[in-house]
Length: 607
Image (cartoon, rainbow, N blue to C red):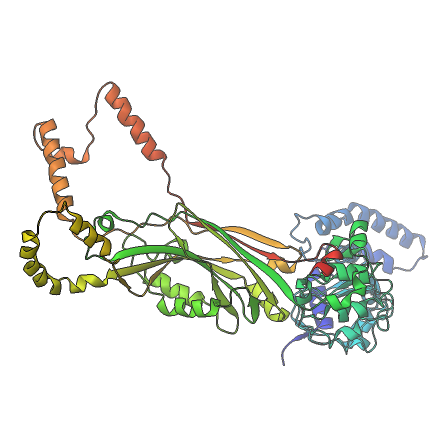
């Protein structure tokens, strides 16, 4: 099994410091400074005179050596080629300066006694070995962002006061608590893989009697009352970080922790004010009201930027043409195994997914699904974005007809007890999609029109022979006519825009994520059908009028604008300016997710 021990990583760190290389250590760059120290005091007058000359020579320096001041500048200046790497500590800098001033001190025994703080970050360390016990004065050990899965506390120096293990792969605390450092004041276990109630039994004063600060952020603790009861034994604890754990999604999380740990000063990087302590007073005694469930409210507001879908040819359709209706709605994802108000939502989404059809849009560029395009690749992209069944469910807002501003006014409360799955969902975020639904409804009576034609001709003569009654018979006939029955085709669904919304901040203290999803400007669909006879006639009349005004058709003038004089010119320029000022509106939708949190002990009784 590959990997690296902590002591081996430290050796590599010492090699990077270059304590025996220029400008540190002893060499040709400072040899004369140490030759005099090797001579024994005393001797004849000639020897003392020679030593005095050597000392004078040392002060002046030889052409092949550097003065002590120059060497110190080499190791202390940030612009020097021999400057320390940016991830080194002040102790590393001090050690290099000692290696310049007194290189004979740089030995293993001295180094192990010298370091009080050891920082080994992101070096691939997977083992805390017993060689760390050689650091007899070590008070701070930082091993963040490595690959450590277990720690034998017998290999930790007993002098430790700070132990930081953030960003490792620790799955249990049993080995760490077998013989923990007795004077430890800070323990950092954030961003590991700690499980919940099986590990909180090790977070007591029995193992950490002097703990002042504890970081358990972004693990998988779920039982709020269980972990709070264990942390209450840490009577010196003043700073606690639990954000990123599933239990922070419980409505009474912050109030319960504050009331259960009255000496706590900072919770999740936020100071605890006296007002908070007063508002949540007595909440810890109402443990029966604190349930390990989360409540979130999803709201969808206004949709803007959808072009008018009604086209001229649809308005001028014949009685045999279908009735076309357009409606719009928004879909979003939420973690499964949750209870929502809309119990029919699952059935609706099954129909939605089975009927989703890609409608080509000749005017949209390829690959523009997320910004308003609607080609077949856009719909395939939409299907790919849909999460697997074991991750999230899709929800949709009520369908609304077209308007320049569509008011969705959608609000849905989601309640779930699977806090671990909810945390994973919030870490991944959700996908918001704007969908257009187009339905073609055909008149059923149109199919019977041909059969009724013959009967109409036979009855026509009889109707003419009847006496005139002022048209009352026709009016009564119209009143008796039943409304036209329509047969609707399966709906055609088109993705107008789809985007990702980040929800991770709900795990770090935010109670509301409110965004306006911007999908860009939609490219309207361009018709590829030939022009209708009315359009042809209209075009011919315009061309005829143009010829009359200009005295004939000039091919070169078809793409140029005739410049008028006086007021006409000003009028045209003002109209053109108004046209230029009209800017397309991007497709946007208002979307927000609110995490329900109690603000006082009274909220528990209200819930």
